Image 1: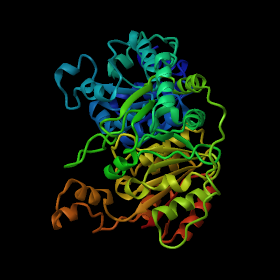
Image 2: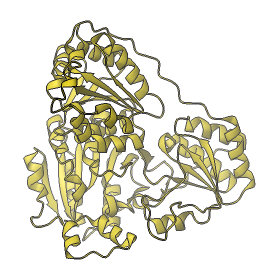
Image 3: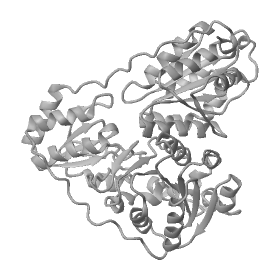
Image 4: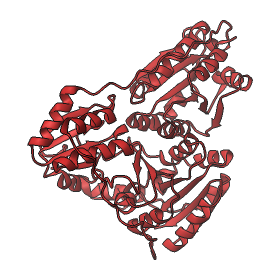
Length: 513
């Protein structure tokens, strides 16, 4: 058995049965091992940022890590942006990165790079395999690290000779550490604050945004007369009818500061205190009042649901019915608006849908219009590195077993970063509906110009314009094997959405806004 074979056997034994890949020469023995050893689903991405984004979406829905297969340091570098987003989402991923053979590395061939140096900023665990005999044991530790709560990125660098040399040994799966239990002192302190203080906000993030923890947070807040919100950017929120109509901290600095201005205490559950996405002249970086006290009920690595359960027991909070979100939205009509598109989506999305949201500026008001939609999951851009939406949707569809419709709300500018994900959707016949919000410009940057106090002229405006030539999304999608159509009204968009929901494979709607 060679090192690559021991790696595949160990990954499978550790519960990793999906590999998102873009291989090269140094990974050929790993690829060959995948061919010989049954059990691993292999999904090809046509660029490494597609691969890492798919692994992020997969973890968010499957709740377990996939492997990525990346080609040397530059291949890892291509995937760093979506690894950054995955780190912010706290997604578990096992990166397998090929490298020069150990004896070839000192010769400084063209692809030789500081692969460990590039991996460390996005990885909680990084190791370079030393020899074939150790590859299996290294892989078991990598999976254990990736599965450690709340989810971490582990990067195993595999020199080519450690893959092709004989002497590999399969390692047994290592135990998965349980999430850290809540601190009784933190629970008692949070209960005291809710009982005794005024203007308290319970802020949820991470795993606390599943349906049951939300209901527990509402129960605690309702019994004490306080409020609950979600962080601005979240890996996965369970939403829709029968769940809490939860608003998130706004993106825009002025709106966020106003929304949080009245709170004197923040209780954090798998969340951090809100700060600005960017710094702006003459605006505070902290979006909550400087004199507000911040209390941590559960850190990211702690069991937020258990902490909230302990909190309601400490408070003696009675069962509380969630507020009614109102009737299901009615489809929008006429020219596309953010509110109209959100209502159309809320009216039509099937129960159990997954929304992968990279709508950027157009979608900031989508939450308010979709609280009463059918039950669904909403995945957001977590790290701010655009180009996550299409790969995220692709990986989420696979992570959900291909049984749930995924709707990718996608800004046109950021879609061009990872357009190749459409090809993977077509190849894998995934149930993904992509709605391109086509305005032909980097709209978010036009707003940011004003926010930072800059004055754009003709050259600057040209840098924010996606015209000349115009992007033709119907043709682009067709070239990737995805059926597509253009809509200019919400009625047309709704008809195309229904058409896409009725079929099994991917579909793209270019919505001109």
